[in-house]
Length: 154
Image (tube, rainbow, N blue to C red):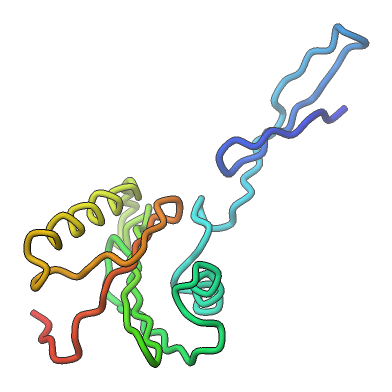
């Protein structure tokens, strides 16, 4: 008989119960992941998903025209730019599996340290560092100001 389900992080533990009355014993028979994105709730490279997410978080208005630009070449993070009539910002999301030939993995929580460093540097030299506008540690992402259109990549 299948017993109770208990949520543990983003997995479900399925128990098998045996015995009768107060003598029932249980054992875990299966651990099922309930996330199809490797533990990440939002994939910022899926345009429809990120637009719904941004509207839910009130980072963009529902009726606003939005342009989404994906920046390629990122090895350890996904990076996109969002442009609306009134704003422009960049979303950066850590990858667990790096985009390299071999299977290299890294702790996604490193993005939290990066975000905290940017926020600290912004307090010291705001003219040289983008401002962190929003963050979502459970999705390993943060939102920061876009560089001005006059900026020159280096």
